[in-house]
Image (cartoon, rainbow, N blue to C red; front, top):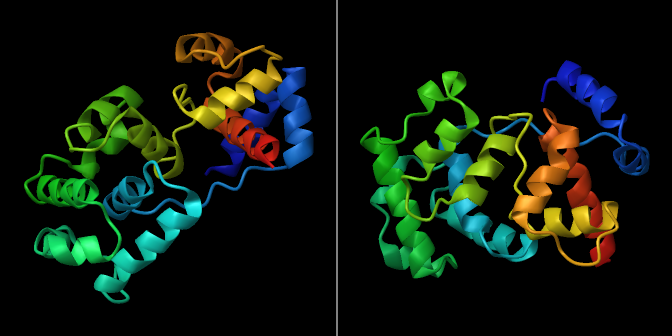
Length: 204
């Protein structure tokens, strides 16, 4: 992520005393260089609805199928389903990876145009793939493309972090979260990182 943009984000976010406290507590966000589109989406699908540890184990087994190189769409598409299942993937996720690979090969998903596309256009583009919903698309926008104003309001960690920050008696709805988050625009990707850190701390 561009350091200049991150510094600019801090100046905006610190205007809110609640976010300023989180920045002081957790330091700078560690947004690593994003993977290219295809492996990033492979990873996002594998990690869906799993704990980090379980997903990492399955992802490692999946990569082992293809040796030291990242698999190509053609390699995944031609891998027998049974072999993908033996790596720990559910039948459903194996089918999602096959569909992702097919759509990369036939041009349905074309990363070359992402730079000139809006966040919402990219979401709609990615959601043509089976198993890729708004949450997965948002993770791609945040951690692969490093778009600065993405706010996954349906994410449980974001909801828990927002509940704590805003001292709410119950988990807020996605609609309420969207409204409350407007104070952090156009840097809500950075704000989300701090809410996740807070949620992790609350979980112990």
